[in-house]
Length: 286
Image (spheres, one colour):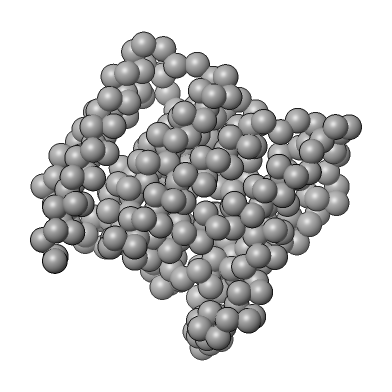
């Protein structure tokens, strides 16, 4: 559990860095940035599965399962499409003024994940986790009332990711090997985006390449955390990422107003409560 918590926290920090870098890019389309991220992610992780014996065995095991049950390929294609849309949105949003809407989607995501965990996998919450969920729900409810509805990026994130993780768990495609295959399926489209991208004068490629490298590391850690933690705990820890995305959105120039404190104060309190609950749980296991 401790390894899963650490992986989740580091992944959240890296995702926020990618978000901030994307928002600073000029004279380059979001689809080309997305394409570079996919291609570089595959370029980094593919050699691992070719050269490291334990990883190669993991990939061969996964391919053997798919060969034995071809129907599992449906879940692989579905997961690839779902995560592809999310990775695209993560490039599109900060470059097109939807950074705050994206952060709200990630605030809602853990709540939806908890519902999915309880409904689909019969997972239980501790008392501290239940209180944290209630606090977070109060903060999100306030935001919904005063924001006048949910923007489409918000809905795409909070509804799309739970389907993605539920599909992976149902098919037992929770390993990084499965994510590698998902990225492989996205690569032809990514290459097309790169080749047809209209890069303007002065566009800097180095920040784009850094997004690809950071994205590969972050997704590996993120999916690793998903396989180490229960869906409910994993979802609650995901509150760290939207807090960091919110900070990145403000740094990019999007504005908050005073009443937003009623949204984020309960959520931050929920994070503190979750941290304390996790600390007590780890102490009790010693």
